[in-house]
Amino acid sequence: MLRVHKVLHHENHMLYVELNNGSKGYFDLSPYLDKGIFVRLKNVDYLKTVRPDSCGIYWPEGQDFSADTIEHEMVCEVS
Image (cartoon, rainbow, N blue to C red):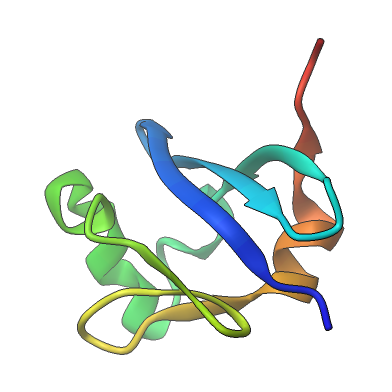
């Protein structure tokens, strides 16, 4: 099962993510910021409270993304 190993705020509305399959890269939250409960993620201080969980990432007020979504939309890290 695909899991998020590590997640960190990178800049603005971008997260750096490492998955358990070895993939590493950046996940841009910008396309979601005007949709439903994700509006709260416009606040960068709140966005920084992101945590990994067993199936993806989440925030204290219930916003979440699956590891599969992250992998599909992630921009791979440039070496």
